[in-house]
Length: 231
Ligand code: CA
Image (cartoon, rainbow, N blue to C red; front, top):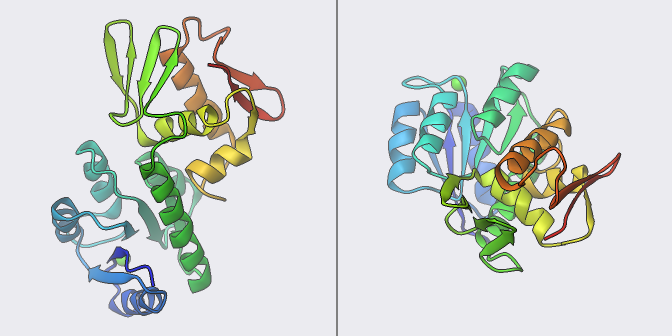
């Protein structure tokens, strides 16, 4: 029994009950809220280990709840659940800072697997990196506790995903890390429609940390495979 606190935000009462019952059987402590605004208040007051967040909600939709939380730097893991399962919604949810996405109707077993995977990633994110709290790349210094990068006398804020991508690379310096490995570590399987998304994150990290982003000194692309960090 894990006892971790989960919050289900879902206005379809029957569905919320079925999900809650199943999660409770797995040993989680579950609360249910049916209104977006109420959910936002509740999460602000006491962030659970994970939020299962419906998109179409009374009060405030799930996307807005997620957007506001991330704007306030509330870093609680979020799993979107929605009937609107087209690719645009999926991408939007993840770009707003969601951790994963399940289109309704879904198999309960699938939901359980996703919940366990997100909690596992979230625990990993909360542990100390094997190399410590700081990564120095030439003139750039990344603070893994404060989620910032100092380059010269400028300080930039990094997102959770950026921090976790860097950490995945930095924990195995000099090794080639595949895009699939990064996806699995940082998002979990199937979370993204394409591995290209990682390339976009890498481009931003290089712009921030590399003296010359066009010919990287630290974050190298290994063609057809993935990335390698050379501190
Ligand atoms: Ca709904």
